[in-house]
Amino acid sequence: MQVQVLEKPQADQTVLERLASEVRGSVHAQRLLKTHASWQYPDGRYCEFYLPSTNQRKGYADRDFGDIVPYLWLLSPTKAEQYAKTLDAHYDFGIISDNDQYRSFDNLDYVFGYYLLYRLTSAGEWANRFLAIADELVSRFCGDGGTPEFVRKSGARSIKQSAFSLGILEIAAFAYGLGGGKQHHDAITVVLQKLLKVKSNGHEPRALQPRWRLETPFFSPSWIALRGKAPFRLFKDNANWLHSLIEIDRHCPTAESEPLLHQLIPEIVQTFYRAFPPESEAIIAVKGKLEGTRPSLIGLPLAFDLDRVLHTSQELASLWPEPARRSFIDAALAWYDGADSIVLAESNTDQHLDIAVDLATAAIQNRLAFGQKRSAKDILYKCRLAVEQHASSKGYMTFPPRPGGGDIVCVKYNFLLLKLDICDYVIRQYDFLPDADLRFLSDIFLVDR
Image 1 (cartoon, rainbow, N blue to C red):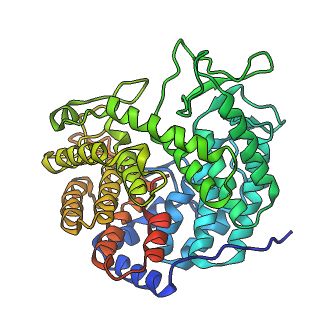
Image 2 (image 1 turned 60 degrees about the horizontal axis):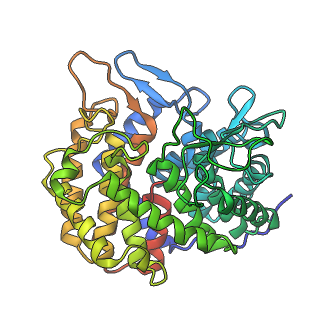
């Protein structure tokens, strides 16, 4: 069944053509054009990892489709659409499966890729493909108000409720915005109603989501910690959750979305202060991954993004008052400016390519929102120098090449590196592009989901 597409791409096509022309001429794009074919299998699908030392491809990058296709489109619209058609034929109901399971982790970026392709091309074919897959995901995962880690092909659902799966609500919001049907709004409403009632170990309800909670017919929907604890992660669990609530409020607001959003933002802010003390010396020193209150810099891009969102929203700005927000963000930026290298891997011993790019992209967008073009240029320059440490003739390595080998190319990271070229274009054109075009470029290419 063909659906009526209600939403149209927002950017002027001239802007996209100009962006694509400039990106194709960049040093990284030229390297990408020379190397990306070596990452493809004979059927046209990309591998997930490439091992330069042995010229081996490992796994499939199908679940990273949304992190590849918009950047591939900038290089070649024809190749991007052919890649989409290649993936289209591989999965039952359009959903990626792992043996007898459908997992949210495998499908969120995958289905989002078709939405992005529609926004770039305005082709109803991709809107309809996105809606068809979104229908399957939403009905299978959210039908009873839950957000399970996986659903079996038989219909059985995991009793582990996953915060990462809340990203499906963002997919439902986009689908509703495209005219996909009342079922998406209903699914969102049922999940949000349940989440408003969830209590944390018998305490008051809270909006911040633990990585897992158990839910069976024998338990009320409360947080039952696994192994004695229910860790909270900013990235990507609660980042997905925040983006979902923002897009729900934008495309299909419900009675529950606004109170949850007003509850979630202060709780995320409190976590920032536990994870990233605002003194620059302390920020440099923190290590580790956010589990409970253990700190990590991997969630810092969310702070930059949230600051930018609140700066443009009078309604939400009071949820992180301006003086405290400026103090925190200024300290984080001072750390960034003073750091010799962007050492953000979980081991805290090697510079991680993707985290370095995500942090720079979020910081650049933040600085532009406050009119700080010089600062944005400096951040871009610093990140370009950092990522060149990862360069090789076979692609950019996840970590800088090490003596003795063991290097690995993550394919999606190499496409995501084009964010830096897009940031360069946006910085130069920031004073001339309409707000709608800037929002479009950010939504499609720069926001990390």
